[in-house]
Structures are given as structure tokens and as C-alpha cells.
Length: 287
Image (cartoon, rainbow, N blue to C red; front, side):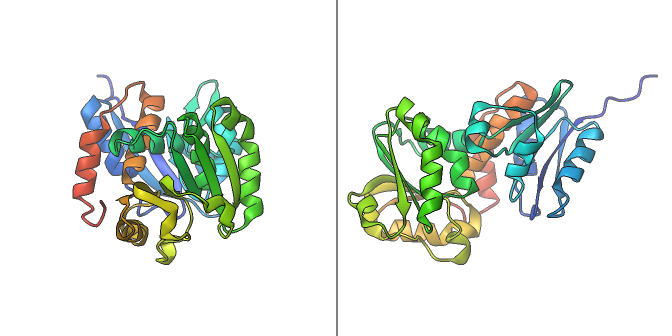
């Protein structure tokens, strides 16, 4: 008698990771598409990510998602990368293949899909402000530019970091017809005209600080998106709503980037709308 076939294993690795909604999302995707898999959370020691992900792969696992603070380390561990992961210098998705590990970064495409399909705002020709220049901003800037906005401004607390991120994406911006500039949050020349879309990739939400820029940076009815979700996004969304903008948290981005990873692993693309609706029902504080 043949032994039952075990479901394929996947996980999200990070520190912290207990808050992650990825197991809920991927379980919903698997049920929807008829895929046999299990998806776990794995807490990694801050100095033990490489050992833990290697052990997970050696156990027969098929792939994993990677969250803070290990995305750059995940990129360095994989010999093969997608162009968008290479542009970001970070990976949030690993696939363990017979020919070697493969790395992708699905954050940016997840954000763009949520903005354009979920929020109904085509980015082409718009003015976009990206707040922050860390790993989250680096992960989304490439796909954001590929959506062909007219202008993208990267503003960060420390200007040199924003300038370096913009320099790394200068050729990519030119290829897609976008004007890309960068500087400090206190640079008035960057905020001379309001923006149609403001994206918060800073840690200000975690500090309950709302937004690190004045409300005049928002055009009337602008879309204001915090890449975080749940309680962490509430202060930014409250700031946006008070300024007359449309606030949105990062939950849609989370589901969309997960769908892109799921497609890379399983070869099928799930329908994200019902999964996002179900997820929001479990998180009444999110919008």
C-alpha cells in the first residue's frame, strides 16, 4: 500500500513573525486553487537566518517568504534572481529548485496591483511621493517606476540614503519615462507641488506619528497608502483622511504580493479579491 502523499511545505521566515497573516492568505489560496500545501511561520534568530532557511530547504520544503529583517540576506543566499529582485537588492520570496535556489521580490508588483486594481488608481502620468529609502522603499520603487508615473520623488529623513536609492534606479526611471528625484524630508523644492499618490514606507507609523510630511503634499482626493496594515497604519490613515485624501493600508499589497509568490511556486494565480475581503473581516481596524 502506497504511503499518503505529504503536502508541500512553505513558510514565512522573519523576526518578528508571530503577527504575519501569510499563513491565512496562503491557506485560502490553496483551498481556492486546489493545491496541496502547508504554510508555517518560522521565527529566525537575528544571527541565524541562513542556517534556518538552509535547514528548512533541506527538509524538503519547496519555498518560503522572507520578511524583516532578512530580505537582503535572502537575496545574497540565492544564486538566481529575478530582475526586480536584483534591482531592489532584496528578496521576499525564495523557491527551492533542483537547479538551485531562486529569489524574487514581489512587494512592488503587489503594491502596484493593489493601487491600480484595488484602489482603482492608474499610476501612469501621476505625481507620486515615496516616503522612506530603506528596504521597503527599495523593494517597491522598481515596479512603481515601471507603471510609468510622470514624477516620482523619494524623500527620506537622511537625504544621502534617498539620493543613493534614486541613483540606483535612474536608468530604470529613464527607460520608463518617469522623472525621478530624491532628497531629505525637509527639502522644500521636493514638495513644491502636491502629489496624486503618497506612499509611506517609513517607520513613522510604528511610532504613532502619522506622517513625516505636511498635509499640503496631498492633492485633493489623493490616494495615501501606508505599506503597513492593522493598528500600525492607523495614525497615517487618520492623517490622510483629515487632509481630505483617500487612506489605504498595506493589507491589499500583502495579499497581492502573496499571490505573486504563490504563482511562482505553484504555477497558478489565485483570485485575490475574496481573500482580501476575508482577511479584512478578521481585522476590523484595517480599512
